[in-house]
Image (cartoon, rainbow, N blue to C red; front, side, top):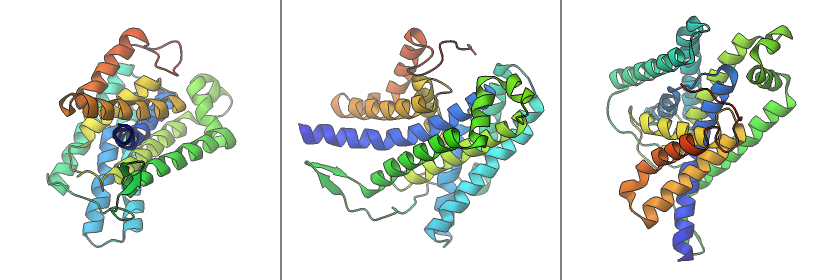
Amino acid sequence: MLSELLQFLFSGLTVGAMYALAAVGFSLIYSASGVINFAQGEFIMLGGMSAALLVQAGVPLPLAISLAVLVATVAGLIVEKLAIEPAGNSEVVTLVIITIGASLTLRGLVEVFLGKGNHALPAFSGEEPIAILGATLMPQSLWVMGVTLVVVVALALFFGRTALGKAVLATSCNKLAAQLVGVNTRFILLLAFGLSAALGAVGGILVAPMTYTSYDVGIMIGLKGFVAAALGGLGSGIGAIVGGLLLGVVEAMTAGYISSAYKDAMPFVLILLILFFLPQGLFGKKTTDRV
């Protein structure tokens, strides 16, 4: 019984860590601009696809990972410059529609130029399972959880110890006040898109060895990342992490103890419960905008 519980918990934390990275991307952009970026899932897909194809082409894994993160980051910057910036101070609903359009465009471009096939990335450090109290844990799961922890610490240091990070926080608190004290809020928004795209790519690369990646994997991952961000509270970094891990564990427990047929339905049950009873999320602000 304990081993079974641990097995589901390991599985949930692994998937939840990826949701957490996606959710942090949502929260970063929402904090800097108030935009809910529904292209976040495509950044995750782009990272996994780029890394897998580069490795298949003979590029060493570390270099392929670096280039894949760079590709997704550039894609994020292009989306901001070509789609978000021209929209200026448009209504939030308009910006949401623009990000959905950007998502469809990115997915279409990948489908046309990289194909519809499934691609796999080799495990970073072997595929020999690690036995823990009767349960097993894949080495790649340790990579997912470990890198997520490193990213969380790095972001905490960035926002807490650097002037640039504090400028992002100032912009999220009050954009006009930040402008008045000299913060370049246009650059902050560009930075938020680049950073969130890089985080999404890291998530996509980390899970690519455990699941096949293809041009359309970003749809469901992006939606679940949004659910995780809403669960934790949009705009809250710690909320995004907690929301992602909680969502992953709930999914795994549902699949293990009820039925895997309901696994993908649970995030949407959770988002309905959150919208009905706790619209600001677990760690979000007390006031929210309805879009």
